[in-house]
Length: 506
Image (cartoon, rainbow, N blue to C red; front, side):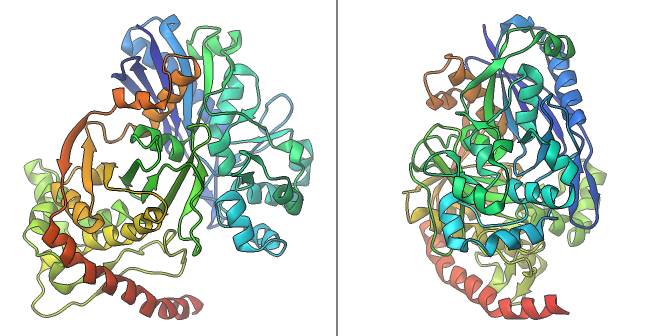
């Protein structure tokens, strides 16, 4: 039996997961590392911690699973995106990694925006011009740390650095290239025009290879550090967002999913970029070669639900702790007793401003429509409905280009039956829930590894990994009832938008 080892280098830590060639999860190990947050909008990580995490989890997983390291057919990666790590010719980090959450490059984004119209930029790379992306962060280093910039041989994202540490080779692939926001979606290579406009030296960007590319083999030095066998193939894999597409079964046109975690998004797979005229959604390069992963991510999806638990549902939380229950089960029980439309209460889920579909940093949360007759359960249900109606706008944008009649739902929000039904009714789709809700990124990386070394013919092999456990159909009456409520939701945001702007100006 051959095995596939997937490393998911996330923001809070690395998760190493072992699958066999039949798609069965064998075991996993997690190693946590820290993020330095400072100067209000800055966020950095030490890449040495990533390497330590990969070394310890690789060795630990081999021991835990009681397998021979020689039976690992490939090592592949999923990793946090939109970062900037500068390394010299020997692959040594010249400074800490600026992670995706860092927003220091505001001035650089503005300067780039003066040279290229937003739509021109968006239609080339699939993203808005923002300080969150890798290109703008490298511009900041050039402007503020000239010695680091001068000595930079290549800039890498997290998984690309670990690929180098294992193989000695410098590469990236299209999905992480997308997260630099200077990859031309037509060519799947760097946009020379945008790179030139940014003033960045193009040779500081790594060569772009397919996500299924075997970047090299584990060196003798890396084998000693990790417990892997020397010569084991190392496959690029992809950015965590695009790997999630694969792990959720979104590998062919129109196959779509909803991730409901702290942030939440809806994504699909298409054979062309989806370029919404209002730029409400964005498009990544997929890890399936030649395909795209359009999506829209909201800031506070499950995060709004967690806020509800922590701030409003204190009694449920205390009771759950006392009785050994989940507080969310108790909250869901109350929500099920509320009517569709939450008794006229509408919640705007903009507790952290908003990305898709609003792109409004000034937006804030709100409960609208409260009346004396409303009960607490209405407020609880309105939070679920508000998050779902916000994501439904993203789904509507994607549906302009692809037919979407069902969604696989993953993440913690997929656990509750009532939220799944609200999603089915507001989205008007069949909701399918797999057995494994938190393994999509790892499964995506594993499939990329399997395709890369020839174990799998193509990415349809993900069907071996996904076991659908629950299916919920939309209720036609509820679908009809939600249509006017969705219109009110939109009207309320548009009415409050100028108010948000005034509040932010204080």
